[in-house]
Length: 357
Image 1 (cartoon, rainbow, N blue to C red):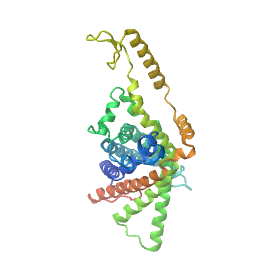
Image 2 (spheres, one colour; image 1 turned 90 degrees about the vertical axis):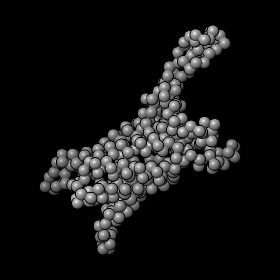
Image 3 (cartoon, one colour; image 1 turned 180 degrees about the vertical axis):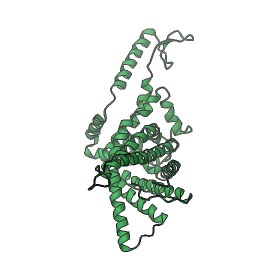
Image 4 (tube, rainbow, N blue to C red; image 1 turned 45 degrees about the horizontal axis):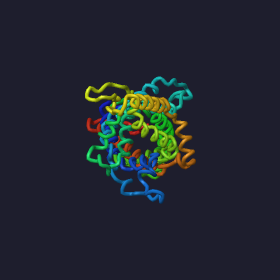
């Protein structure tokens, strides 16, 4: 990676993330709505089951601000962690006469480096993903539509902000196998395309050629990995959407005396006609809230629930759309990153190895 400073990696990664977020975000919004458990309730017309396109396609950029803010540092953290971890593991990889490149196979080194980078990136990205997916579900035609969807979503987490990290395990659990599938396939496709162009004498070595080969290879590999990991993505979406519903329950209800009232009020300021009714109602609310808060379903339980509701096909909802937007997103993301880091190094009169992975 000679010629690439850490700032090059950060800038190129941020530029790639910003480009992808703006261009393919609407497709991600549609995917989230299709995978939502409230899809039929919110986006279809009653018993007929016909899709209400006006509602489904309204507000496709809701929540994009939170993602742009978070993906800039998360993408920079991913590529920085990946490059440094890969370099460290390569140096530590013992060699032999028969294996000069290292006893541990290079794909395993890359897989460990990318998995480490994903874990770091997901820690930064999870809150934004939770906000984004809940904002994508805000009804833009409701009476509160004058308030920004992201602000409406943030208000739900005011009492229990730690719920924003709910879904980290699910997000990591989706991204790790996705990365493990995408990168080896990406490398194989890229090598194949370059070999074909070399044999035909069509290799030009230009920045445009490098970007196009990287984009095509990454897009193809990403689409395959996306479709294969769709069931994990469906479960992840359910977990993150439920975070907003569970967040208010994190605030324990308690009784307090309101000086301007003859009765008792709870922590939310609600009063009852009589003390006995108030106490009874509050105790029931606490019991129900505690049960829900402590009864959070595991990813496995959510998967079984989806199977019970919609069968096997329920786990693959949005798979085709996810494959399409991942093809575009991965192609743009890695293609822009690759071109960006090479261009930034070339401005200083330096050259870099364009073999990213």
